[in-house]
Length: 124
Image 1 (cartoon, rainbow, N blue to C red):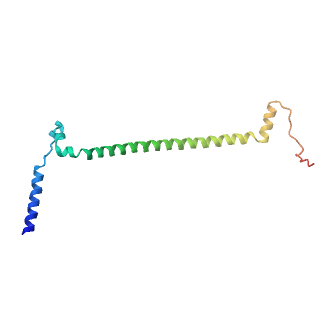
Image 2: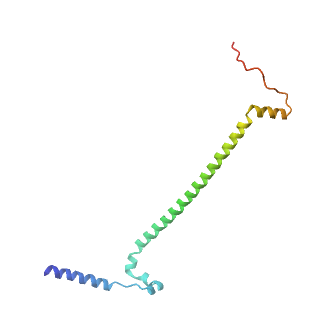
Image 3: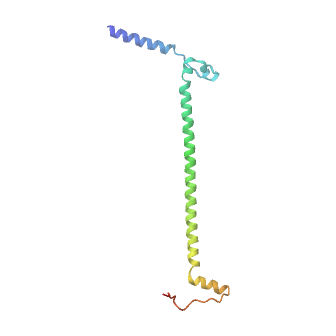
Protein backbone atom coordinates (compact mmCIF):
# COMPACT_ATOMS: atom_id res chain seq x y z
CA UNK A 1 0.00 0.00 0.00
CA UNK A 2 3.04 2.25 0.45
CA UNK A 3 3.75 2.60 -3.27
CA UNK A 4 0.16 3.43 -4.11
CA UNK A 5 -0.11 6.05 -1.40
CA UNK A 6 3.05 7.67 -2.78
CA UNK A 7 1.49 7.80 -6.25
CA UNK A 8 -1.74 9.19 -4.81
CA UNK A 9 0.26 11.89 -3.03
CA UNK A 10 2.07 12.80 -6.27
CA UNK A 11 -1.21 12.99 -8.21
CA UNK A 12 -2.74 15.13 -5.47
CA UNK A 13 0.31 17.41 -5.54
CA UNK A 14 0.12 17.78 -9.35
CA UNK A 15 -3.59 18.58 -9.14
CA UNK A 16 -2.90 21.16 -6.44
CA UNK A 17 -0.15 22.77 -8.60
CA UNK A 18 -2.53 22.92 -11.56
CA UNK A 19 -5.22 24.53 -9.43
CA UNK A 20 -2.71 27.12 -8.17
CA UNK A 21 -1.62 28.08 -11.67
CA UNK A 22 -2.97 31.45 -12.61
CA UNK A 23 -5.59 31.41 -15.32
CA UNK A 24 -5.39 34.04 -18.01
CA UNK A 25 -8.59 35.39 -19.42
CA UNK A 26 -9.10 37.49 -22.50
CA UNK A 27 -9.74 40.45 -20.22
CA UNK A 28 -6.29 39.99 -18.64
CA UNK A 29 -4.62 39.89 -22.05
CA UNK A 30 -6.52 42.95 -23.30
CA UNK A 31 -5.73 44.99 -20.19
CA UNK A 32 -2.07 43.97 -20.12
CA UNK A 33 -2.22 42.33 -16.70
CA UNK A 34 -1.17 39.01 -18.21
CA UNK A 35 2.26 40.43 -19.04
CA UNK A 36 3.00 40.98 -15.35
CA UNK A 37 2.55 37.35 -14.41
CA UNK A 38 5.72 35.51 -13.41
CA UNK A 39 5.17 32.35 -15.47
CA UNK A 40 4.57 34.43 -18.60
CA UNK A 41 7.75 36.39 -18.00
CA UNK A 42 9.67 33.11 -17.89
CA UNK A 43 8.35 32.29 -21.36
CA UNK A 44 9.59 35.52 -22.99
CA UNK A 45 12.92 34.06 -24.29
CA UNK A 46 11.05 31.21 -25.96
CA UNK A 47 8.51 33.61 -27.51
CA UNK A 48 11.33 35.85 -28.75
CA UNK A 49 13.08 32.85 -30.26
CA UNK A 50 9.89 31.90 -32.11
CA UNK A 51 9.41 35.48 -33.32
CA UNK A 52 12.98 35.67 -34.64
CA UNK A 53 12.58 32.29 -36.30
CA UNK A 54 9.37 33.50 -37.97
CA UNK A 55 11.14 36.64 -39.24
CA UNK A 56 13.96 34.55 -40.72
CA UNK A 57 11.39 32.30 -42.39
CA UNK A 58 9.51 35.25 -43.90
CA UNK A 59 12.74 36.90 -45.07
CA UNK A 60 13.95 33.65 -46.64
CA UNK A 61 10.66 33.22 -48.49
CA UNK A 62 10.71 36.77 -49.88
CA UNK A 63 14.32 36.47 -51.05
CA UNK A 64 13.58 33.09 -52.65
CA UNK A 65 10.60 34.53 -54.54
CA UNK A 66 12.74 37.46 -55.69
CA UNK A 67 15.36 35.03 -57.00
CA UNK A 68 12.67 33.07 -58.87
CA UNK A 69 11.39 36.28 -60.50
CA UNK A 70 14.97 37.17 -61.50
CA UNK A 71 15.50 33.69 -62.99
CA UNK A 72 12.29 33.99 -65.02
CA UNK A 73 13.31 37.45 -66.27
CA UNK A 74 16.75 36.19 -67.28
CA UNK A 75 15.24 33.17 -69.09
CA UNK A 76 13.01 35.48 -71.15
CA UNK A 77 15.98 37.73 -71.88
CA UNK A 78 18.03 34.72 -73.00
CA UNK A 79 15.29 33.55 -75.37
CA UNK A 80 15.04 37.07 -76.85
CA UNK A 81 18.83 37.19 -77.31
CA UNK A 82 18.80 33.79 -79.07
CA UNK A 83 16.08 34.91 -81.47
CA UNK A 84 17.91 38.16 -82.19
CA UNK A 85 21.15 36.24 -82.78
CA UNK A 86 19.41 33.92 -85.24
CA UNK A 87 17.90 36.88 -87.07
CA UNK A 88 21.22 38.73 -87.36
CA UNK A 89 22.99 35.54 -88.43
CA UNK A 90 20.43 34.94 -91.17
CA UNK A 91 20.71 38.54 -92.39
CA UNK A 92 24.51 38.24 -92.50
CA UNK A 93 24.30 34.99 -94.48
CA UNK A 94 21.90 36.67 -96.91
CA UNK A 95 24.21 39.67 -97.35
CA UNK A 96 27.28 37.54 -97.95
CA UNK A 97 25.82 35.65 -100.91
CA UNK A 98 27.44 36.38 -104.22
CA UNK A 99 24.19 37.31 -105.94
CA UNK A 100 23.34 39.84 -103.22
CA UNK A 101 26.80 41.43 -103.44
CA UNK A 102 26.54 41.69 -107.24
CA UNK A 103 23.08 43.30 -107.03
CA UNK A 104 24.29 45.87 -104.49
CA UNK A 105 27.31 46.72 -106.63
CA UNK A 106 25.06 47.27 -109.67
CA UNK A 107 22.71 49.46 -107.63
CA UNK A 108 25.63 51.69 -106.60
CA UNK A 109 26.85 51.97 -110.17
CA UNK A 110 30.14 50.16 -109.65
CA UNK A 111 31.99 48.88 -112.71
CA UNK A 112 33.32 45.77 -110.93
CA UNK A 113 32.52 42.50 -112.61
CA UNK A 114 32.58 38.86 -111.62
CA UNK A 115 35.78 37.12 -112.65
CA UNK A 116 35.32 34.47 -115.31
CA UNK A 117 38.71 32.89 -114.64
CA UNK A 118 39.12 30.58 -111.64
CA UNK A 119 41.68 31.65 -109.04
CA UNK A 120 45.11 30.18 -109.56
CA UNK A 121 47.90 29.51 -107.11
CA UNK A 122 51.32 30.61 -108.32
CA UNK A 123 54.13 28.36 -107.08
CA UNK A 124 57.63 29.81 -107.15
